[in-house]
Figure 1 (tube, rainbow, N blue to C red):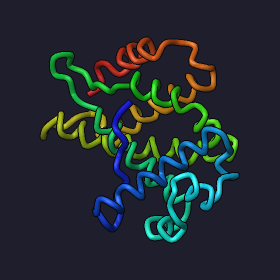
Figure 2 (figure 1 turned 120 degrees about the vertical axis):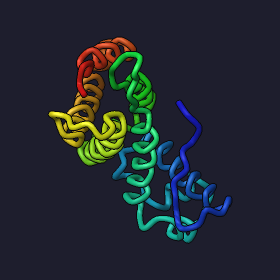
Figure 3 (figure 1 turned 135 degrees about the horizontal axis):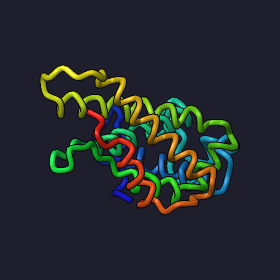
Figure 4 (figure 1 turned 180 degrees about the vertical axis):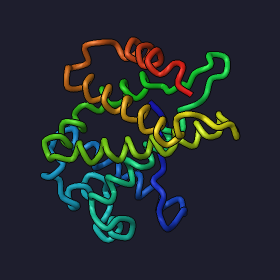
Length: 191
């Protein structure tokens, strides 16, 4: 999908960034085979090849690490929402998001079995809505609009999350590109 996203921390030193990256991706790899709740900090450290003191130098616990990883992804993905003047419509690469979650299905299932999906999708929706609202305000300029930017952004972000969850729960019955086309037809004309 993309190069690994950098999880920010107190230190931007190359070694610190590498440690945060190795730890976060160790958790992701472990979730491909285990429930999130069954994974310990020690498991993460062993998989990443770092000591516990290194883990705790960067993260308070695995929940903080997961949320920070999720927030970085949301920032990156949410930044893909844009106004397309040629089409007179907002654009969002929903197919890219759907392909990513399909590829990460084992991680989704690990989080679902540990009852974390609602939290993760809430963080995604809120993060997307924040990014979308900024884009909407920028695309509109100073003109007054009937629908407040924050409300429209929540509507679009909610549609993204609901379509994604429906698609996953129904075992990806429609190609991601086709859902992307339908999604854009549904949001066309929103301003």
